[in-house]
Image 1 (cartoon, each protein chain N blue to C red):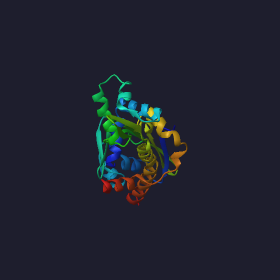
Image 2: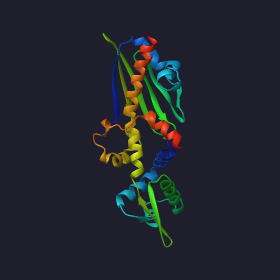
Image 3: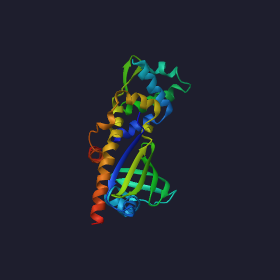
Image 4: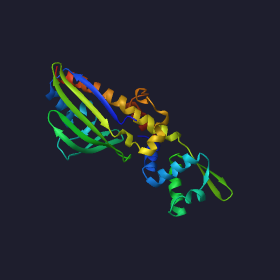
Length: 140
Length: 108
């Protein structure tokens, strides 16, 4: 089973700009999620989206190249890890995002049951999390 | 996150409850609380409490026969978690596109 979501995105911007966008709380809040954040190892951050809270700890901060933090959706008790890597190139900056520990939802043996009918399911995305979170907020 | 998803996560966060659930999945038929208790070293009262949580999360269907309660595993709620994990893929795609827009806006 695939345990890591990996995304590579090319941006036509300088590495410093991309680094600021992913590490400065005001910038994170502007495009990603409302953030109380500092790119310092050990910093315990909080992201909030409506009624969903995500928190975790910065485990690696290497400006302007790498940022890693744990990612825990409050209420799930499941710890995953999100890693951002930036690489300067001719076109600007290549971003590699990795979200690992997905199989921790919820645990190995449960995962085995869950994923029985799930081969190749990663590509068959249904709807986006934003929409899902909004709907669930209205539903509850 | 929807309330019931929270309940599912909470109920399967506990190893004993996972074992109870697993036992019922493997049995693929209804077991009485007495039968379930035989597999565990904790009190029947404790087992009943765990079963109640699993039932509240929708992972166990219960029926009554005489004085006995019978439990049957229901794996359908797990689909909700499966979908939720899948949604991360799309979530990151959307967010990384937003990041691109944000950068374009800011660094015109």
